Length: 405
Image 1 (cartoon, rainbow, N blue to C red):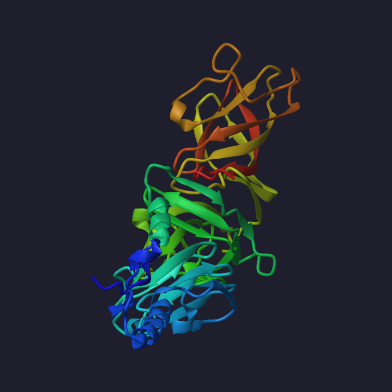
Image 2: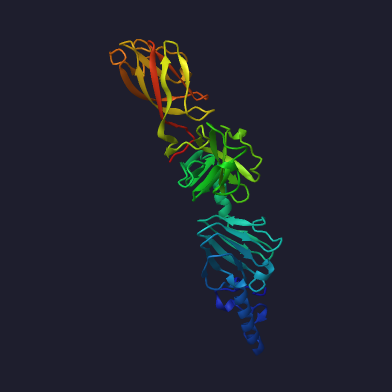
């Protein structure tokens, strides 16, 4: 059989009696030696890669035949267009490159109707790389990108938020909210961004940072707006939408075509003037108002348990950080503020206790503090051992979304 490829040559020299069908054994015509040299040159050019070439690219680029065996490192988001597969393999019969995304996502775009791993395009995410080979008709990879995507979509790793702390925007604190860089997962859905994103409540949702954030309608007074992380179906990029719905199912999706809602990531409250209440957010879903809110001032509290609405998110349970001031004409009296889920309790040392009480002086003031869960209507309960007056100061709340940092 003719030894027509570089790899068909043998390491035992005496066994190599032809080159691409040209006889070079003992007694061959002199012209065969010339022809065999030419065949060797053609075979080496066809079958043997040149040296590995490293090339950094800062913009989009079109790969050509001479890029065979190259390492192309992109330092910014770009598109790598691929010359027609037949052209790339016309000389060497095979063609391959390694692509590194080191500054932004790189889109691999084959020529015309040609495909890469059976798809029209392939995105190499920033911080990753892939090996691309051509068979003369289409392109194939080492499946590193698809393996990363499959890993990212695994359901077994749970549901969580890493980062993504909310804050009032420094330039427009009344209307704009900043979301720090984050990674978010819920079940099989995952989205991540290394950059912060800003959305505002002055308009309905539009793509990108600085754009409107509302799923529908216009901003309202004394309202609760829940923030949800979005994943763009086509390229996996992150965005955020805000809705008065406390659940994903209630979010209006008319404007969200091409996006999947991944997970609830936070909450924003407005005041009576429809502007965002100033707050500071800490790790593990803790919100603190810049100025404490007086949710009750000198209200009557009696032996009959009563509900009290607080300035916290509506439609969900939160753990609110409260401080109290209490006064009673009775020298011995206590007031109990508690989670409505506990039912009807009785204040007093012989019963369910209290969070604040009189200092054994009639009409004297006493203070206390507690962290108490609300019901979904933003309420806690309060009751006293005897009639008294109660002040409630709200420092903030915990709204658990699954944030671990």
